[in-house]
Length: 188
Image (cartoon, rainbow, N blue to C red; front, side, top):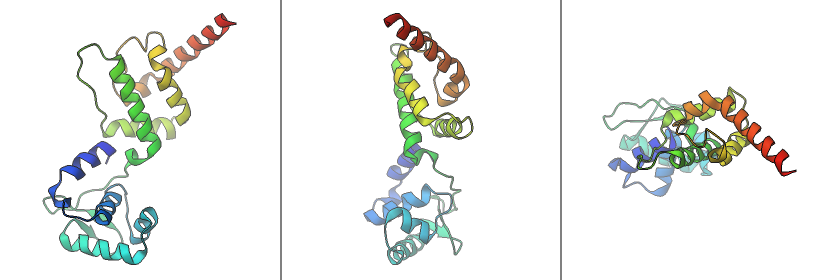
């Protein structure tokens, strides 16, 4: 689940409103992890194993999570076990890049355009850029910081999602490199 999806889902689900903070935190850890065990929850939360055991037992009893004896998973409102996915978006570096991207997208949007918001696929595309395409997080952040000043790309509303950024990455990067190299030479 993406951060936006988790936020919308978590804060709109009335089943969680009566939970104490530790139980809510445990629910979020389970929702954001592909496989949650008492050990992983304990490590990620800082709670001792005994506390995690008490919390998870109560959440299972309430029907909010289920267990196969070893790991925990979320239960949907209907009572079915939800498929959990690794929460790419909860990784701070991907979240930061997606937020930067959407700030740029909304800045380059034509006047009167509705504000565009990220979705789950945007986090996956940014993750692919970093992990599969081997583009450094700092490089993506650097380009996004200067994006509005890159000729053509910063003037047009071409990139409207992370998949668009990934698709046009090489052209955007080359334009930025060419523009800033030329600017530097002119200043000397």
